Length: 392
Image: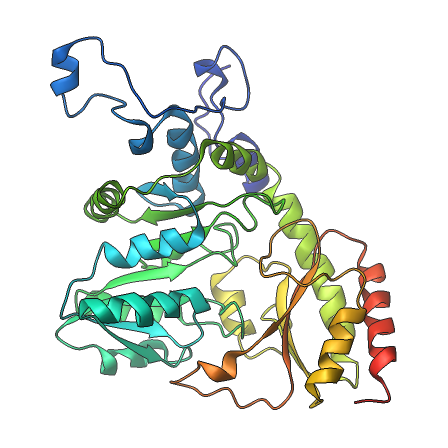
């Protein structure tokens, strides 16, 4: 099999990412490598800091394959893998902050990112300021002399605001501030942050890349050698690494990523449009919808969407909302997304939003649309609404 040199279309590229049959006697998927100890052929090899593999958590042929694939997917310089999405975002921030720094974090951020800032970075003398996700280039006015990082998430994974990533990245670059984005919603497939000026793209491969609700995995992709070395050094110092089984499953999931995301997007559009016509629904939060406030940015910067969006119910009691959620048969309550199954979960953003308080009166629910037939999902939602009709 000759070495692939031509740049192919997206679906074709994904099928071939992460494999190297020429290195494994013709085996398509790289074998699982479980090791801690690496044996050296000589003292000279042991003393050589550039020896290919030195210790299990520092890298293996399998982690190399995964990281190379993620670098190609995100169109960056280099990748560092970790054991979860939360460990990846922790690594990203810890690589570029120090005591006395000020960081800017979007108010729409994934809640564990906020927890990291409030529970740990604060104790290290790092100040976090949350900003309006729709601020765009206006973020320049918030940058201080000691601002070291701007953290983005587009769209927000609870409230789905689309950020003007190029404008924020440009403002940060002028002041020498590092930009980090949580790119999990787009999975590196729908959006290429580094090509829009971002320094570090972070993902929870737990979600769409793994794709089957059985992986815990995260990674960072850096835009250049300097930033790659910074995150790699921090990962080594903090003892962060990814489990071999999860790396293997993520590479396998990568090959069907586009098929699954295309299906999820198609089904999500069907369900979201149906929900827009329901009287029980106040708003559908999905940038893929033409009338969504973030649709213009999505069309400009992204190549598509996924299957995750939010709905705001008409005001109702907690008991009514609970009854609706628990009446659904095809939407179990779950906190992840990107797997094969549909999920639902309530969001409680009002208690932590600060820069832009959440003003909606109705309950906010997040839906993950899986690979089921969308008509079955619609019928399930319809029967759920039917059971609370009198209580709304």
